[in-house]
Image (cartoon, rainbow, N blue to C red; front, side):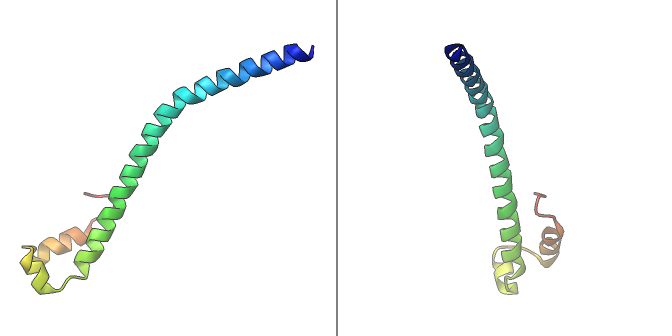
Length: 80
């Protein structure tokens, strides 16, 4: 009886492992997409913060007008 339980347990574990492996690839892709999105959000936030702290002469140097800066700074971190 013990060997029958072990066999069933091994079969269940291997089937579960196979399912996890199949879902793992999809989960990994979704995870990578989420990480990329969060990375983009952080980039947006950091860039806007840096722009908000730039002196006027540097904004002029990069060709950014004050109104363009205001519009950019009003955007939420998830907005492009």
